[in-house]
Image (cartoon, rainbow, N blue to C red; front, side, top):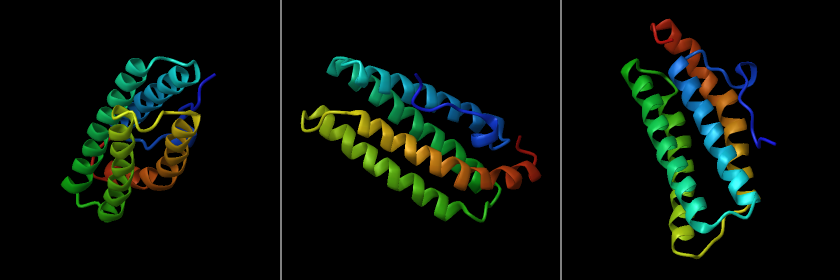
Length: 136
């Protein structure tokens, strides 16, 4: 069973690029969660963790580029949320690869909870603004 499911009603921003990226993030998180819950080996977990973090970083850059290009008024606060999550994720990634921590269901639940709070409450705010600038 999926840890998190994307629906347009709950997570849609009406910016198609970002909605597609969010869906990919959900799929990658679900895959990582399944691998962790299924007792997958460290190499598989590490590869999925690295892939997820890399994709999230590209997604954040995509959102931030759109916000900067059109002078989105909530850019600074939005970027801070991104930067804070990236710092946590990079710390976990570093410690995982150093053998200092293991990924667990709590790890994937943390990311899920962040997404469930961030996308509806923060990302959805840029949708109408970017749409008004012709970004769909």
